[in-house]
Length: 294
Image (cartoon, rainbow, N blue to C red):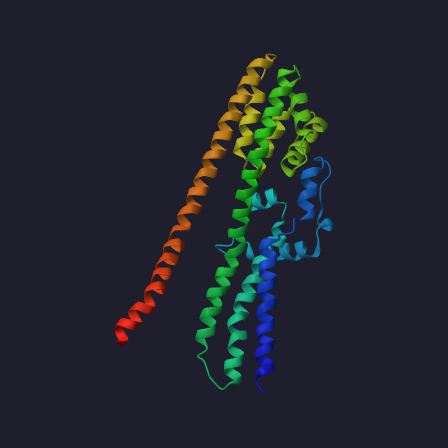
């Protein structure tokens, strides 16, 4: 008689967990910020260009933004191409799901005649809601960290290309634009958009790179802008400076990869030791049982 409510409760929880995994593993970039990065400054994205989810999220952001502890990582979201409205809507939806989870789980107990105190599901609901509310922040932070690492790898190749263009007596602006036009990944598209905007607005290209570095928190790009800002007619000096920065950047990237590999190896030490102990217990179990039973 109580099978149907249990099935409905399990289906609801399963659907909520599936949506949670889908949102965390496959974040959808916002169209508005992407268009704003790829178009000149004179072309702006208005509120009419926002999607329905972005408008709802902006409404929540206006009302929840004044609550202490509610913070939106705008720089990381801009780097990932996600809108702050969608981010806030996701946080609110996950928190609401966390509040409902204990209630849905307690329905079969209530139908079975087992009464639970009110504060038990309420406390668990608040705890789960708090954990799910900060989950998008952690996911965005990790994704932004990986995106900056990917940008640093692409910038290493970009520096080599700029150095080769300068060694071929190309001007600073020409070397930066031609080197950026070679790549096809999203870091090169960011560079192409910044340099295109510099050409249209008649500003120095190193200024556009500096603004790009500050907008997305890319300190490694600041070094390129500083080198090109101090460049004069001597292409050889700039070539040496760019190659030296490329070598230093490659060393930093290799050191970071080695540190990550060591961390991963250390994390595998405990499971490996536990597995060895379990194998030893499994092998010794028959002998111990025989000694005890004799």
